[in-house]
Amino acid sequence: MSSDSRGTHLSVAIIARDAELEIAETIRSVHGIADEIVVYDTGSTDGTKTVTQRLATKVVDGSWNDSFAAARNHCLQHVTGEWVLWLDAGEQLDQKDAKALRKFVDAQVDEQKAYMLLVKVPQAGADISSEQAGRIRLVPNRPELRWEGRIRETLKPSLAANGYAVDGIPYVIQRGTRENDPQVKVLRARRNIRLVDLAVKEEGPQGYLLNLLGDAFQALGEFKRAAEFFKHAIAASDAGSIDLLDAYYGLLTSLERVEDGTEQQVPVCLEALESFPLDAQLLCAMGGYLQSQGRLDLATRSYETAHKHGQVEPECWHLDRIHEVSAICYSLSLQLQKQFEPAKAVLQEALEAAPDSVKLRRQMIDLYIKLGKRTEALEEARRLPAETRNPEALRSAIRGACFASQQNWISARAYLEAAYNSGCRDVLCLRWLSLTLLSTGEFEKAEPILEDWQNADPNNVESQQYLAAIKARHESPAAAPQPQPPAGTPRFSTPRTVRVDDEATKEHGKTHGPSRPSISPSRSRRSSSQNT
Image (cartoon, rainbow, N blue to C red):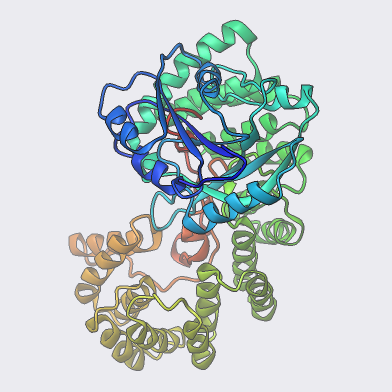
């Protein structure tokens, strides 16, 4: 562990219970920067204590009395550092951020401030973006600073009462993959319902508690009940508050899974935008709703506003790189209106701001493919990361896709089959090879390619519809429609967790009309190893 001439300068504090599968990596990630690591065990029955006694500086046997604040405050009694970094089991800092954070603590911290770090949840799948939120995690170790709250515990009242400011620092705490485990979500949801019931008896029906109930019932798949709690949270929350924004996110998400709920999304989103007119996630969601109703002009304006003026409330869970998502949605909506030069300009501007973005780079490649601009598409492909799988085969697929976009099926097939036979299973190759075969009536040959496409991108609507059309053709050749190559349409997932499937970056067909926004119900995955 790190040592400092001034003594114990930085302590890492962790409360844990039954976390033997994940706590070792959490401790190892800060071993090189912490002067001490204190684990407060609230009653583990697995091998957590065996792991922590081997790796941590101090392991304290504690108890669990249905209060996260109480557990953290008990843990603090055993912490000796001047500064405390709070982590939960399963969370980690990468080596670069860990070193930068230690350097910040040694040289730049202000004793009258607490610091907010970004906590990031991993992607639940290849087509779902990661999410993040700001959380107060680095604080001076002072006796007047105490945690409050049985659940969603906070230092804010204590910080405010004692004149401490809160500042943000650009270091990321990564959560583990267990965040996406359905069983873990269900167990936490049931626990949270019990804790919220206790908290409501003490505090009354506060907005944040009603949001937690909405989250829990989403995780349990009870979306109608979740929607009702979010509506109550909207009524109970202060105007302009984080709780109010969170409640709108939750309600919009729940309505996606409620009968006739999608009909309510536009008026609810309009109501939310009255309070949060420049919220980037709400604006992108509104664009998706309007587009699903065929109001592409209004959808484009909503995406444009998100792209040019959209803002993010850091303490609400939000999409990682939401501004890139808004640029993609805006560009695709322009492409639908055949405004290709403005669409390209949007992507170019976004790439100048985020040159490392693979999603934006892929969108630019797709745009050049649609326009049949092979040289430009290949040049963009050369700028993809060095670790891009099978780059030569991908370039062959891009050549074929450019021919396919111009309906030169013979040349397209030669390049695309060469890429496929060379092992390319990139969605770009699978999609355009499928479309080439479908367009030339070779349905049997297209079917296994479509299955590969669906395996590579399980949530893709386009591949599902083509497979369904082929199945219908098998059953009734005369009645089954022939699939047609699609035109591009953006697709955006509503907030909370505002998951964007990367369908936001793909296309859907004219044969099934504009895509409807896809809304994630999985907000419960935001909870930490013990808390939300």
